[in-house]
Image 1 (tube, rainbow, N blue to C red):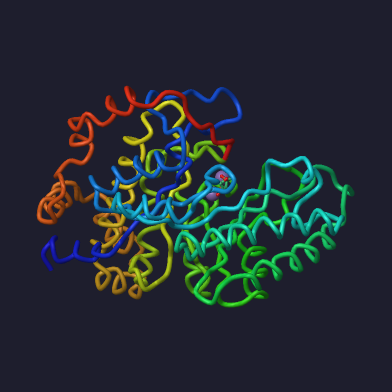
Image 2 (cartoon, helix red, strand yellow; image 1 turned 180 degrees about the vertical axis):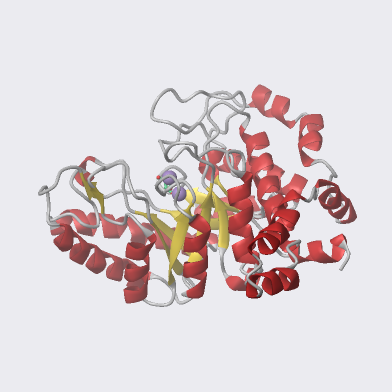
Length: 386
Ligand code: LRH
Ligand code: MN
Ligand code: MN
């Protein structure tokens, strides 16, 4: 197959961008502002739409409630459509309310649990108004000290709360459950790992699926193994892509470890998980604290596209033969050959053939958009730490 034929595997592949990446966000320390930062969700969507217009890769924008609360969600969805994008996952927020000091969906007080469930009903309502089909839940609940609470009772209360949320979904909606092994609590998080997320999803039903945030694992974790296992179970609902050096750094995906990103995409591509019908939502969860936010998002979606293009280049027949023959080095070499292939020219050709700029970053810089928004927007929305 020619490179262009191989790269036709990218047709239909999309990446969803987060509204909070366009606002001032990231780190619990100083959050630096960038000139032209959006002042409201409408401006965040306008910026996100630029990324899609230049790359052809990012047609959906995730919202985060309450950061993106607006009076008229129908108007927000229409605004997105006018700009050539649409609303993606609706993210709930259980980590900025005093009532949740000892838990939200897991709290011992039924009134606090009911409040946390109710927040998800608001999100489901927003889904109906915006045409979103994914409700995304990251649970910040946990404990800091052994003996602080019954680990088991918290799981039971969580199961009950999740059941209520799941029951509120419409038949075409999914519940995406995200795990994280630490932070904001450090002794035990209530959904620390993919196993716990998977068990809850399996108890809920087919439309409950796991979100894998690449920054939410202990250093050294083999993430592609988890990807394989969740795909095998039919429960990989979505990614939150980002890069990490230390913790939940939320840096540009593919910047810290492009080889890890390639290994993940190779696992995905090996079973067609990149195809739209697989239902895996490839999202970004990033913060651009010191770099230009729009350029940071362009770089991110291009990095994911590049990793997938290399993954599609893996000679699967040669790989299988080498694996079956016990040819350890041969099999490894097949994979590395794909990783070391420079696909940038082929991707530029493909973009040009689709009426897109060969170099989206250069096109963005030449467009004058950054200067335009810097001059036209004063003040910005501050999203909280992610
Ligand atoms: C917290 C987090 C999580 C969510 C996001 C909104 O760790 O980053 O990954 O997806 O906040
Ligand atoms: Mn995340
Ligand atoms: Mn995170």
